Length: 140
Image (cartoon, rainbow, N blue to C red; front, top):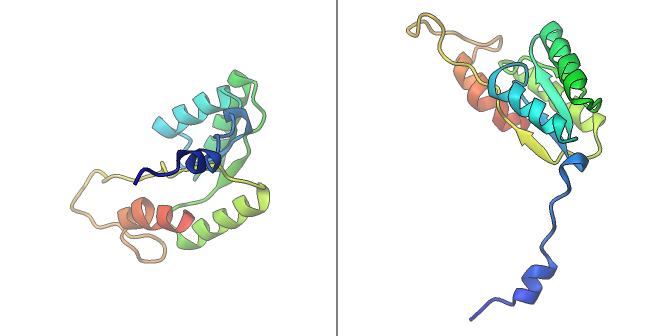
């Protein structure tokens, strides 16, 4: 049986234009996250810029605003190795915006200089597990 294409098409939603979208990017102060924030801001999207270091994050926010002309770039600070801070980040985002169109779980941590050394978060979770797996799951 062929699906009713009329029904499928009627229920299909067109994606909002990029300038109407609100996008949260974790780890947006360096690397891929920073480049993505810059590119999407240039297209007019509202970028919720996340970072762990307030000074660095505010500098990146200022730089992106200046280079793109987009002022719709609030900053959210959280250390994603902390479950409590991830929960607070979620509360701030929920209370700060009416809609979140895209979540880019970009923040991550690799191994330090000594890969054999076990690092733990404030709450006792293995650091990579906390940042790379627990926090994206919880934030989502």
